Length: 298
Image (spheres, rainbow, N blue to C red):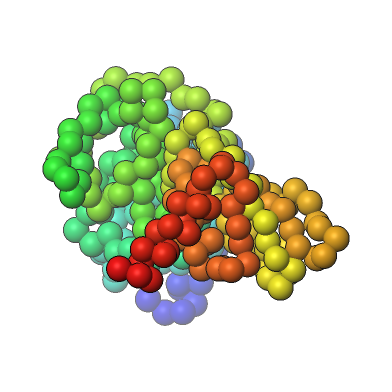
């Protein structure tokens, strides 16, 4: 395909996609007249190149499923046009992959916190199945590989695939409790027919949560920060769910954090020794110091 022919194809498909996204009905005869192509070419555009889109057909006319109207961005149009133009050269670009580009519901199933590093090689089918289960709000059953022994979960309710510091986790509710499961340890996944009632409060909490400790019974921790490092904690959150409660007269800070487990905070406290101290809950600072003393004096 010459560059000129490719550019014409890109323009034509882009315009057709924009029309569909705006709710217009398309038919091969009208498209042939508008773009100076044959009716057969227009039919191929609608029947083949757009085959992965959720189109409704009435007679010779096509339109986009009304539930998807307005959800395709200009960037999506550009990406689609380029992909469609070279699709025959890259057969690995599957219908499922192209469909996901335009499906904002799939995008809402993912929550990325930090960089993406973990490879999904060999586990793509499970990942896609979880995406679809989240979108459709279908319960799942799976086997979870744990160091202390495998555990089976049934009728779990999947809410998000969370990427935290490069590692993928499934956030799901099991027996009323929100939990995080390392995706790489999930096996024998099966999506069930029964659906669950979506709780928007759970989704909100997942978006606001800084880590993957998803215990809904939060612990509030209060810490002091010395003036020597206060600027770093004022610049950005260095403790999970950090809130600056007070700036002290000497330049230090009092900060708080609501966390699912104290281990969300302890690694940071150890890193910043001696500039951080835990005020509450009582006893945690003493336990930390005792563990450090035991490490230094075995």
